[in-house]
Amino acid sequence: MAKKQKRPAPGAKGMSAERYIREKARKLPVDKCYISSDWEESGMAAVIIVRRQPSGKLVIGRYLVDMQCLGVKDCDYCFNAVDADVKQITEDYDVAFEETTYDVVHNLILGAVEFAEEAGFKPHSAFGIAQYILDEDSDDIPLIEYDYGVNGMHHITVDEFTDPKTLDTLRRKLDPDKYTVTYSDGSPYLEGVDAVSHREDMQKWHEEHPDVEYHYQLPDYPSDLVLKHPFIAELLDPKYLDSMSRALAERIIALPPEEAAADLSALIMYAIGRTHADSDFPENSAIFHAVLLLGVIAHPSGLDAMLEIMRQSFEWVDNNLGDMISEEFGVLLGSVALSRLDDLERFMYEPGLDELNTVVVNKAWSSIVLAHPDMRDRVTEVFRRLLAEMADKLTQHTVWGPCYAAHTISILVDLHAEELLPEIKRVYDTGWVDPEVCGGYDEVVDDMAHDRNFASDDTPDNIYDIYDIYGIKVEP
Image (cartoon, rainbow, N blue to C red; front, side, top):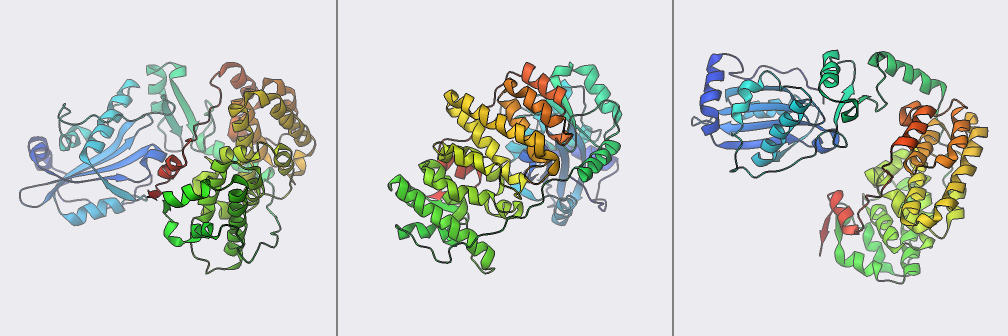
């Protein structure tokens, strides 16, 4: 979360500001509170608390809160400010802000301070004054509990700005199994390796081990939408871009499964074609809605349309499905493919596709094992065949590249497929497994032997819960 250079706010320095805030700030009414919109995803929250003085001027507290380890890592304050200063402060960051309640930021800041102190980290020095812009913690303020750290453990992301003393503090205060450290690219931290050099080495490695070049030739998609149940075309209405009709969804789900799946598939193929052929095609979420509904209906005839989505470019998929492709899509795909596993396996050998899309099929296989443990041996053999082919052909990078190989192995680690370690070793021996995804072969062996937290499917069972995750309002 980069902060731009900014002009000093009025009253930012001087004893008068410190004394006024220490003695008066808590008595002032809270005017507004803001928080960076991406705080839940990034683990870093920029918080602004504004209190209004009797004169109409403002006391402002600004807090940069690392929820993963360090707590309040930066903050400042001012008084006798004006409304324009609030706007200026929000513009100092390269993230968007949203208005929130005082209870939210109060609990978030103080909870992060407490979490950081467990690892030996004190809040930024200016918090000694800026804390008085917060109310005293008491039972009068409703308790809101947040998840701090990563998987419950203190976590440091190392980059070129990381103070080495930070890691020293972490080591002194916590046992090694109580914290994690990674580079900013997500790869495990290597003791004694400079972050900048590591990043440069990884960049060189990727240049020497390129991923598969995307060159899928688009087929002729239908230019007309032909449906047995024409009302399904309502999904194309732009009014459903950020909303969904529960009545429409239930009406589609109530159809005979084969008919519903056939019409939803036809809609997907038509919509794919229109997005490529017609730049004026109205923006809509028809493909997003259709994928969710196909996953609920779980009829095998929906598989072809879902696989055609995965054949598109990463940019296209990202534009039409967003985070769904990496989160829920694999599980939905698994439910549709359950009786067509041979077709799903054949897709894994198609050349020229985008690896960031096709790795999603790994989650489909994983979800099948989790939902149907009796199918584990069959799925294991699917991966055994795949690993054998990759060991022979990975260096050709025509079908698979380093990214796909590493994510395939990562899924097998999650499933604890220790019986496939010989095949995994052969793939690693090619030198074409992305080391930033799941480390080296020895790390894979260690993870399978010691990490007994088996993969789990945390995709909501209810379609409307998924809509809620993506902020899509479901109307009656």
